[in-house]
Each structure stands twice: as structure tokens, then as C-alpha cells.
Image 1 (cartoon, rainbow, N blue to C red):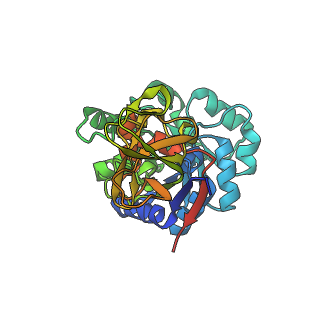
Image 2: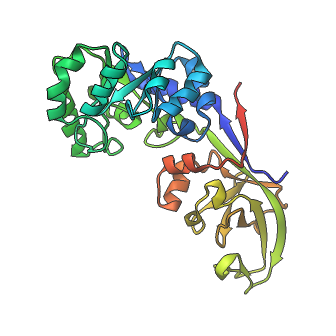
Length: 347
């Protein structure tokens, strides 16, 4: 088999959610963010696993993503849409019982005119300047919104992965001021905010990356494992080069394995200079450039030629790859390509 295998540990996913649920504290509802197709791992499978673990509220980026999650979960669980009520979303929001997080005056007007009586939430901008109503907008709409079927008021932290960043306290203060006196559930924290402590938890937390094994949740169990089959192994003499652009030159007699994966599978070319793949516990360096479908690896130090090598495993998670590529774990996860054979495991 020349297809690489992406293994998703559903038990680890559920355990990570439970740990973040416990960290959210008593009396706080722990939701689950399953946008971007469940961070690239299949929103349907992810949502079903988390619902079984106890999650009853889910967040997606767009109404179309909400449709996939509703199909997987059926009626009952609440599905909230970060992008709010966009033009053309009305039928989907109504038919699938989605809860849009309204971000502007225009969205509020669209929603109450098109779907009077339909549940909604409001997203406030507390300083990130990305989505949500600013203080003046919210002040103008607040009494109208509170007189409707509002289910949640939320905002989003810009620097929660940096616990000492002053922006965290600034946004917390702004959120408290904008929501003072509102008898509506409130939500401010995703994974990083949960780890900042109880002051940031309010009524609902929204873990995302931490459930999938990523930082800043350092205690997370790995969720994604990636195994790459070896297509061919060759001997290379000192002075010979490997790959495009003669990017790597052998300094000794070397054994080079070519494995089936590349940047078409979401493995960025920038990974090459720093990244290792693993044969069991033994790290083998990637050499030469990562190409569209192939990666070359120095396996000289192995006693036996491997049949497969692991890129994501317990020793090397998504955040290690992210550091090597100069990006973040979110991008590594959501970039994993469709060509992988996917294998879902649970006890």
C-alpha cells in the first residue's frame, strides 16, 4: 500500500474534552468547537464522539458547516455559527435549527426580520477587531437584543495563549463592562482562556485546539498520528545529492528512503530542514526538499530497512511540526490532505 495513513484517536479526543470540561469548573457548560471540518479530522466523527462524551453545544464557522454537524448529530444538540446570519443562510438556519452568533447591526436586522422568534447569540468585539459588535453598536442594540430570543453573549480572546499578556485583562474588563446586568449566559474562553482560570470562564467555555492535542493545553493526549509508507530505499555515495535543487549532499555513504507524502498532503516544504520521521523511537532526518508527493529520509542509522515511518506520533506532535515550519498547530492539522487513508480508533 502506497497510501499514507492518518489515524485519529477518538478516545484521546474525548479525554481531552473531559479534561478541559473539568478545568472549566462546576456550573460552567463546556461546548466544543468543530469548525474547519473538525480541525481537519472530520466534523461528523468528531462531533459524535464529543456528544457521547457529554458535549451538548457545538460551534462552527459557517452555516454550511453546521449542516454537516446537524446531519451527524440529529436534533437536540445546539449548533452555534460564529459567522452569524449571512445573506442566503436564512433557510438553513431555520430548517436545521442553527443558532447564529450575530456580529453586526445588519445581521441583527436580517435575523429578526427573516426569522422572528428564532434563537440567536451575539458576538461582541472586546478589542480583537475581527468579528463582533463594538461597544457603541451593542449599546444601540442591547435592549432590542435582550427582548428577543437571545441565548448567548460571547467574545473571543486575542492573546489567551500568552497568560501574562495585558490584552487578556483588558478584554476581560471590556467584556464585563459590555455585559453588565445582562441575564444571559456569557462565553469568553476557548482553550487558552480556560487555562487562564475561573475569572475567564463565565457560563460557557468553547475548547478547540486543546481537544485535538494542541497547545496551549500541554497535558493534551495526542489525537492525530501519521504513518508514511516507504516506496523505495537507495544507497547514496558521499558527494551525491538528493531531491530538487541539489538541496542535500551526502557527507557519508547513506541509505535514503522515499516515502509517500508531500506538500499536496499538507506537509509544508518549510518542514524539511528541521523535521524528523520516526522508526519506532529512532528519529530519522528528512533530507532534501519536500516535493508534491514524496519526502526523502536518511535511514542510515537503522539496523533494518523500514516499511513505514511515522511523522506524527507521541514523540512528535502537531506543534513540533508547526515550530519546524514556522507556523501554528492549527494550520498543520487543518492542512492534512484528503489523500490519506483515515483510520478512526477507539476502545
